Amino acid sequence: MKNLEIARIFYDIADMLDFQGVSFKPEAYRRAARNLESMSQDLEVVWKQGKLALLPGIGKAMVKKIEEYMLEGSMEYYEKLKTEVPKGVLEIVEIQGVGPKTAKLLYDRLGIETVEQLKDAATSGRIQGLKGLGPKKGENILRGIELKAATRGRKLLGEAVPLVETIVEYMTLHAPVQSINVAGSVRRMKETVGDIDILVTSASRREVMEAFINMPNVREVLLKGNTKASVILKEEIQTDIRVLDEDSFGSALLYFTGSKDHNIQLRNLAIEKGLKLSEYGVFRGEERIAGSTEQDVYDTLGLAYIEPELREAQGEVEAALDGGLPHLVAQADIRGDLHVHTDWTDGHESLRDMVEAAKARGYEYVGISDHSKSLYIAGGMKDDEIRMQMAEVRRLRRDVEGIDILHGAEVDIKDDGELDFEDDILRELDYVIAAVHSKFKMQEEKMTERVVTAMENEHVDILAHPTCRLISEREPVALDMNRVIDAAVETRTSLELNSFVTRLDLNGSYARAAKEGGAKLVINTDSHATRHLDMMKFGIGQARRGWLEPSDVINTMRHGDLLSWLQS
Image (tube, rainbow, N blue to C red; front, side, top):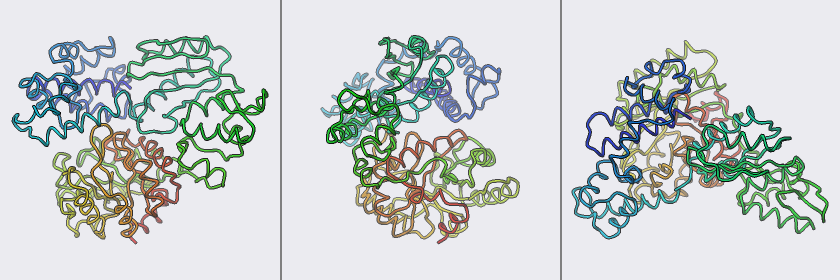
């Protein structure tokens, strides 16, 4: 977690320096932050080994700041900058459509230093007339404020899960826990999380409570009782722990996992059977007849076990009654990752490193898919560069045993639906990923036509992150998803379920719609560093929320079958 904590601080420093009009240093801090985010090593371990100075993009001054944070839990330079910049500026900078320079203009000309003031100025039209800020800018800012408000106080799933893993590891080592499980929206793999719920059984409730409230990342203790404790973590999220009796652990896990609507359906079903269901168990009169495991509860209600990701009152109870629950795709079904970037474009590690990391995860194959030339900001490859990369892939295939390497590319979809590489290059690749990376504000009809036209190119195999959304940062593009799904079926184009934590695109709802429409999907990570390959679990979580089975996902195929599918 220290990697992400310090990266976030460096991003804030960059924004504040930008706001102050400082040259060069902001980009240095952003580059350092990106490097810290993408590190496969634990930054705390690197610090203890005395090797911070060996990290790319980390100069002597930054090394001292990282060491200070490791020792003191704070960074004097960061705290000093926060006194020099209006308090609400960092929050304003996070609004879609507002960067540090726009925030500075709004502050200088209109005295805006809070999101509420920004909203008032955009609503009243006072923004209009400032240099470069017309009526459309005001509308976009208002949408950005609404988007941010919708996820206020919530963490990305990809932020919450590492926290949960840290808590579980800590409690297992420092308290006499017998069983420990996460519940709530984390267990259901929702894309954002409001709080964290941990359930345990233990012979010593007191020791569990003491260990929990004394975790190193606890900022504030809200409650400490005999069976429950609540804290606010330094990562700004409330976390609760409950110590339960073994006889009711399963029913409590079911109850606290949710969703609320799923639980209501189960309670109503229990009533129909003359039973009572609560967090304490299933009761016939005063007698508890089930509750130690979730399986017991479902069995008693006459239901097949319903996986946590399905528990949204979206037909899963009816399917369980009828024997129609899907056999959900799982990590063990995934044979490879087809969306992996390297330092040929905007990745942080070499082609060999990414291949070796995929091999270490037990994959049968990995697909290298760097950016095409139009994406300048990502260092997109020109025609001669991708041919040079083809040669390196061929060499690597000879050198690395135990994994098959596919060579693809993430090719930009131009405004008119044409692709960024000519057909003579595309046909040399094992597969082609088409992606929108610009002009996100196009009207629905034009955007849909743009995307469908690209899918109709005979060389396109995958449509990357179809809605282009960034959770809490950028709205989905206007897209007729029904038409896109139909085009995917007609053109045999797989729709990507992008596992990157800020994307999760397609989400579970769209993934289910694609499945029901007959389309194939592919679960990829969009990795830009070796550690990003671990984000596959977040994509699988969304796939499971979308009722996807292994047969719905092309990267569950064996290598030979996948190649045949891509070439057909």
